[in-house]
Amino acid sequence: MILNDFVQIDEKGLYCKYGDFYLDPKLPAKTAVITHGHADHAVSGNYDVYCTRATASVMQLRYDRTAAKVFNIVGFNEPFTIGKVTITLIPAGHMLGSAQVLMEYEGTRYLYTGDYKLQPDDTCEPIEWVTTDVLITESTFADPEVIHPDPVAEIQKINSIKTNILLGAYGLGKSQRLINLISTHAPQKKILVHHRIMPINAIYQKMGIVLGPHQIYGRKLMKVQDEFVYIVPPFTFDSYIRATGVTRLFASGWKNLQVNQRDTLFISDHVDWNDILETIARTQPKQIWTLHGDGRHLKAHFNNDIFVKLL
Ligand SMILES: [Zn+2]
Ligand SMILES: [Zn+2]
Image (tube, rainbow, N blue to C red):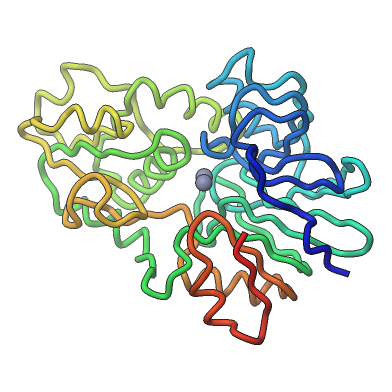
């Protein structure tokens, strides 16, 4: 039997009272299951944290001593229990170490996706599929209007740009994917990386991910035009607004985020509408609960076929 109140949103975030734990709490919690290291999912100050090794490494890098009181490092597909809930982390394909959270309680399966993507990405574990009774999915791009382009075609656009490029991107996950994509599909480019991104690269490399050739940015390097691509976090990107002699691009799944559409590489680490439909086909839920975004399109789409609840 599906329990309608198995997870509920309170002031700290998504809470499961049957196991007394939070999923990606937004405020510090006593017990937290954390899907991945992005700051909107992994806050500091939790007491007991259950997560993958990569997620713990990222949190320790960012938060140091306040990352968690206790890290319980869990491998993918290795069930553990919190209270009477059996939990299994399943690869989510969003960034290195990102996990879906399968929760089993009294014979019913609830799958919280966290952030996830279906596109291939050599810098993280590919998404894996399990069936579930309830699919609790993010709905950031759950709109039939949102269809993400092929990331390879997007990255190949930089081959026709002969000036140096300033490429804005989130430092965690996206930057590493870009280094990998550029070195594969635009190998003549010389990749420079902002110093704040380098420690994250080190975590990836330590975990066996091959990013491709890159070096830390040095002030003198970009003075010459040599097909350099300088990858910088959003804050730095904004501060280079008047940079001359470079083409400014921002890599994002969002339209009109930092710069106009012409200057955006549409490379998303989230599912688009078709990906969500595929996810639903593969996980075969009886119910879909949505959060992060707008679940109304899904509700309309499945109408009477699958019950859709907006959390
Ligand atoms: Zn994320
Ligand atoms: Zn997110």
